[in-house]
Image (cartoon, rainbow, N blue to C red):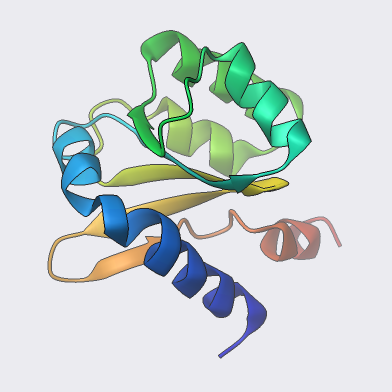
Length: 128
């Protein structure tokens, strides 16, 4: 098991599975669930700018989604911009974890996975 798989397992065990029912209610309607797990100070600043009140899971609003899509595009993160911009795509969970974020997909019968091309390692390989 590589570092990425270990980190995803940790996120699933500590951040997503304990809130599975709440997340399911959000993602089954095509919205993006946001999961917060041990945010750093930098991450807290971002969350607070979104009006975050400390809840471990919440639904990403349309203005938040559009702003995040613009930020991803501005940073050249085409995978993130496409993932966030998709309308009514079920199964998306945006995770704030420590200093970073990750894009998690859930598909019934298959389980959880990271969005292909969305990890830092994959993005570095694309630019070399």
